[in-house]
Length: 245
Image (cartoon, rainbow, N blue to C red; front, side):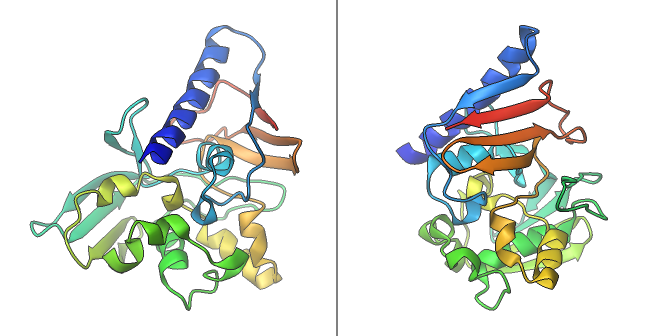
């Protein structure tokens, strides 16, 4: 739990720095000093703080999010949800009009929808999924929190509705979906990489819906991001974000 709180604090600190720089009317580029290099750019397969800050807090969003400075669960990619009386079925209504990042290596043809949610969680829970074993197939947080046993099934009700069926009631399930391992990836991008024979790039050249788009990484030196003008929660006042390692 201490590790989780520490990561939440890192994310809140980064957000505060972004807001502070904009309020002072200074440069539209924020330089952030990172404690180390990320092990990957996919929070699903990571356990280290630098990865969560460099990808989970910048490139990706989750179905729900925590209020700044606290642990209250708020809507994010899911605009609302319903929980069955027995506590075993969570039905999420997804936000419409959310854009995935357009980068030099990927141009999305559609908005975020239920396919992306199914793709994201099935990669971690279904051993026959084409991406399950990519980059080592180690989903430590997913398994460590018992999600592999808890998630009985995921059902696409329609383009913007997803149902999670649990094997038993789980009070912390909703909050767990706000953690970095539950960051939503693009199913369309995943298919493109499979067709190209380069599936491992999904973990090194990230595409998300978050406030910043990945541009370039020089190992042990810098990570460069640029503003996502189409961010559904409002574009950042910063044009660029640079991590100095």
